[in-house]
Amino acid sequence: MKVSRLTRLAAGFAAMAFALVAHAVYPDKPIQYIIPFVPGGESDIAARLQQQVFKVKFNQELIVSNKPGAGGALAWSQLNSMPGDGYTIMGVNLPHIVLQPLEPGTQFKTEDITPVYFFHYTPDAVIVADDSPYRTLADLVKAARKNPEAVSLAGSGTNSANHLAHERLDREFGVKTLYVPFKGTGELVSAVLGNHVSGAMSYSTLAIQQKGKMRMLAIAAEKRSPQFPDVPTFKELGISWVDGAYRGIGVPKSTPPEVRKAVSDMMGAINRDPELRKRMTESGFEVTDIGLEQMPAFIKERSVEYLNAAKGLGMVK
Image 1 (cartoon, rainbow, N blue to C red):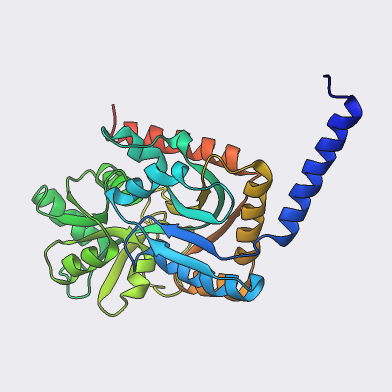
Image 2: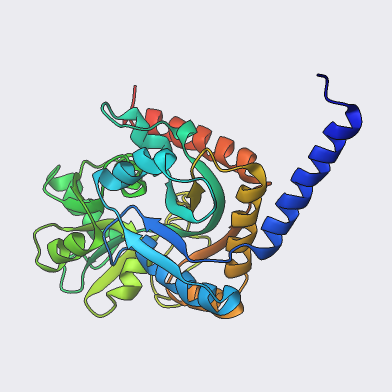
């Protein structure tokens, strides 16, 4: 029996009406928010700030849980096995989701990840312990030139923003330092403060969190950090370097388009909160508002840039 055109139209309008109703009441129950890293890192800190705003705006609970492993790859490889109903979301990071699949054995591909919103990035920064003999970046570079690989820099994970930034530092300044990857920020901090490494290729946020114990030597931002007004940008040092790690939200690939839009809009509402933006900025985060509509072009642009950089730096063939 053929379905009439009127029946098909009615079904279509019903589906649209259902989507609109679902969108209007979303979220009407707690949301599971999975962070693919250990507690205490930048992704976790951002999630805890978002959790507070979510409670006020939506009168629901944003349940933050940590699922660390393989620099985020463990959780990202499992994302598509989770329900695509908008009530399970996961933190996603760039350049991680672009570079990690280049490593043999990684259980996900970049196209497996479905980002719906990016809310900030953290500028790359060279950081040392406050009692470090390196008072400036020039001091560190001089030592590295004198003794290749004697200078060691900790970072979070491999094929990550820290790893890419480390390779770029070596190339830009013509040195050879040793990159020491750690699973999370906590271990990295202990290594730096315990003088087990010379310093870290990390983010401005870490320097702010550890102010008084750590110092920044340079920051990859357009302008100096208000919290460290004496620290130069790489641009001031003659290097065109404004970059860092982007953080956002991803959903399972099975999530319908209208639900993806609802999740993106929800994160946008959280990110527009004036108090949240103030606290993010004070913590060293550079706030962005990249929603679902801008996502394809943004991911394409960043992917090309990361892959070209990784090839140029010899991280991939």
